[in-house]
Image (cartoon, rainbow, N blue to C red):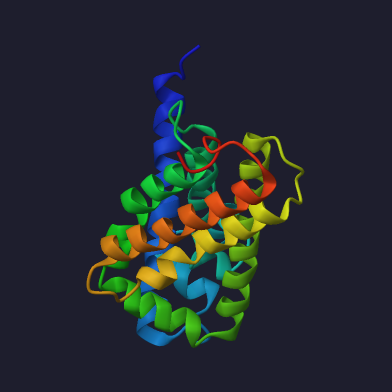
Length: 205
């Protein structure tokens, strides 16, 4: 049964409030530095109460990584919802080209990266999120291929894929960088499959 117009408006309002808080936080962090900005400062800039802020974000660090749940959901969906006949590596290549090339070319990425690199609390939080994404992606790959959840090859692929945005950042041609990395991954996966005596259509083709 479809949502009522009232529910739809409520969800849109919640999303708009969340985005306004995240935007205000990033603006203040870039202007003054993470440590010098308080949660109250952010709430005032976004014109919300601190209670409302914490209803949307569990911590100050989470304000910087406000899209991480979407990032993780998109990664796993790229694997689980790939077209019939498309291998896992090629599905992840398509996702990277669709989602990460534009990001790597965004000039705001430099300031964001500097903010994270210069703030120990954000570096630590970012590393935890990276590992969470790697675990989720590895699990999705293993499930799709009928392998054990802790399969080493699936874990390695997930971690290599998540390095692609870092490798593409600042490159003159991010798209070519993504293609090069996935060409290498495809050949590596084929070698791994050949060594196991597995079929060639489950991953790369």
